Image (tube, rainbow, N blue to C red):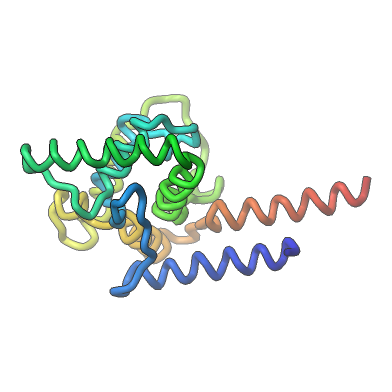
Length: 206
């Protein structure tokens, strides 16, 4: 596959997932017998808070895999008794699969995690403006919730319950439509392929 073909394939994947965000269809991810749901804003914040290896590009332990699957499982529950029972079985299945084929299990979970965050609304350096060496007045999480809640007259808890990819899509829409000359970057995966192409040109000149 050429770099141009790789770029087109990745672009098609991103566009297909954008369509899935607003349709009744979607990708199905199954890990250790659990079907994974679309990650919510709340789950993303929780995973960031505990430094989940799936959001930090680190190799996960069995415990990290169990935690991620549990938080994103379609059968997740806050019922105390059911919760303990469900966690027991996820723990058992994950540890069994980690012994048999850890690479395949981790790849499925990593693919799910990557898909949830690959449309993070990154902005260009011009849009960010000059960086200051001071602590932000408000947390980025609070700013994100306020941005969406204020625009669509939603309660903050409603935003927390939203699928993360939808929240990112709304953030991008809000910023492009309300901030003059706002510059959104392409998704990281596309920029990585373009970077690879430029590197190949440079290497060819050497």
